[in-house]
Image (cartoon, rainbow, N blue to C red):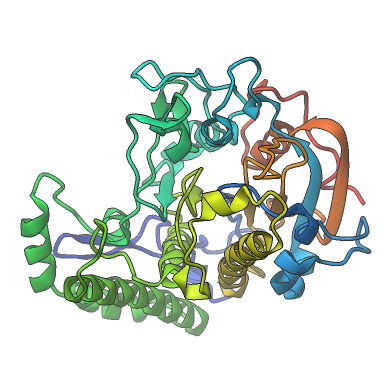
Length: 448
């Protein structure tokens, strides 16, 4: 590490016209003659996929370290030492409990809170505070953004979306208070501007689009400041800064290409500007925005809804023209089961993209995945039967370094999913008395 007489503040920004680009953690940000290695923050993200996952092709065979991936997770083989597959965790409050139909609404609402949602399609919605917002409330003051909520499917938050359950339940997994959902942002351009620029949301969409077309890249605006900063950095920091700025520019260019594609195509449904036509490109873009948000410590808490609960998305990218949700009610139709399995497999392959990007992003003596916790899963296990028990849950990363991944762990029947959240929050320095229906913490993640 290069030792400087003066160190850069952790909150150093490259500033340009209407922009403030946060920087990744650099060696030059460690105070001169500091003792011991730099302390890197722990990041937490929750990735939600809708409508359950085909269990026979999800569950690995074997337990502990001696397990084999099933078909859906096979693409994660190279990452096996970085992740847990957690079986046996339940979301009891996703069940009807006397409220009748509405499993999709309850699945989305209770997934991160462990609280049974009030059955209503009106304004009197009521659920519980989600785990991400427990963390955001305690550590959000340390970053520019307390949390970041993203989605890959546009939706409304009002109205009846599932058998008398409000659309707020199916379309939001993050809840700041029991009556305040945090709707995900689905437009990559608006996420980018929130992270790196100043977006005037009071302007109408046409005016904002016109201004976007005429403005230069935010990196061009900050070029002079970048050149000044490079003179102060050692070789390792210059390489790290160059890699980071390349990523930011690449994200911006991908958004611009998506905007151009959308201007050239007459869509059959309304689509927000900046959304790539290809679903895979869309999800990768949202993952990359989370990556740079973590890398620059703009936030340490994110959620991503790959699709809203009960999603009817079609997947022409993998030759599936049937809506996702109806396919999950397959009634043991082999052709429908195969299509759902292909959708599940695509989702996991895209998760692998994100995990590999985190792992290839160096940070200190390790990488960004080492300092992160990435939880992936669904609020339903069997989408055909609407089961909320033994949910498909994957956890990647080492958190604060105490996790010992590379294992398939089977928990005893009835273990609340919220016990996992209690454990994860501990690694964030947050220690609530309880989350939803939690009964304690998992003791399986840091012991072999």
